[in-house]
Every structure is written in C-alpha cells, then in structure tokens.
Amino acid sequence: MASFNLILAGPDLLQWWWFDGARLETATLPAGTYLFKPTGLVADAVDARLRIGRARLDDSDTPTELAWADWLEVLDTAEPTADPGGFLVRRPLDDGDTYETVFAQFIAARPGELRLDYRLDPASAGGWTSVVLNR
Image (cartoon, rainbow, N blue to C red; front, side, top):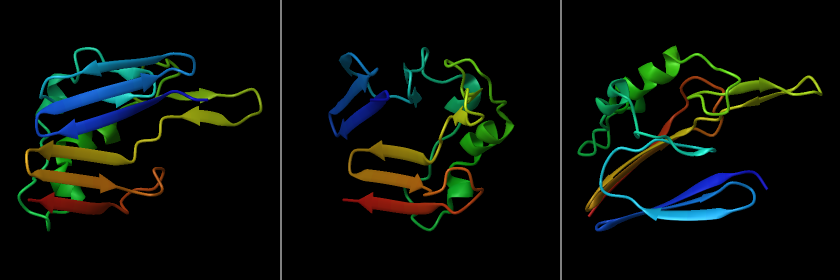
C-alpha cells in the first residue's frame, strides 16, 4: 500500500497519522500551519512564502482563487523535481509513465469554522469546489 496521511482536526486537538507502507506513526500537533506530503509532515512546516496564505473562512462566496491566492501562487511557480522530498515530485517510471504529486485540496479550520476547497481532477486548472461550514 502507498503511504498516506490522516488528519483529525477538532476544537482542542490536531491528531496526525502517517503510514509509510510498512509502519504507522502518530503525533498530536499544536495549532498552526502544516504541509503534509505522502512522505509525511514537511519539516519546519511551511516556508515564509506559504505562511502568508490564510483562507477566508468568514465568506463562503469567496472563490478558491482569492481565498487561497498566496498558496496557489506558490504551487503555480513550483518546479517539479525527482527528489521524493521535494514540494512537487515528478519521477519517470520504467514503463514510460510518471509518478507525480497530486495536489487537489486546501483545508482551513478553527473552532466552529471549516473551509474545504477541492477539485476532482488535480491536473486541471480551476474547477474548484468550496464547502464552508460555520457553527
């Protein structure tokens, strides 16, 4: 089985599980901004360019391109690399196909509020769906 991350976010808890294909790890994380990749939690969470990106939780009509503008700019300018620890990974396979990072969701949460922006086809530009929940 391929590696994966599972995140449980609650008002007083941020729990993370990571499976690397052989071993399951878990950790409780403090409130903050995190970047998870198939290889696990990115050390030092996110660089300064990404820390400025904050979703607008208070307006469900804000389109993804505005709510996550800073993050999308970083994604759009990132260069894929064959390094499995890279931000975006693109590696050729022996059969002529490629293994590539799939990036298709943004999640922002704070007590009583959640915003999820996702797209079903990560390779396409645009096509985002937003779900905003407020208690």
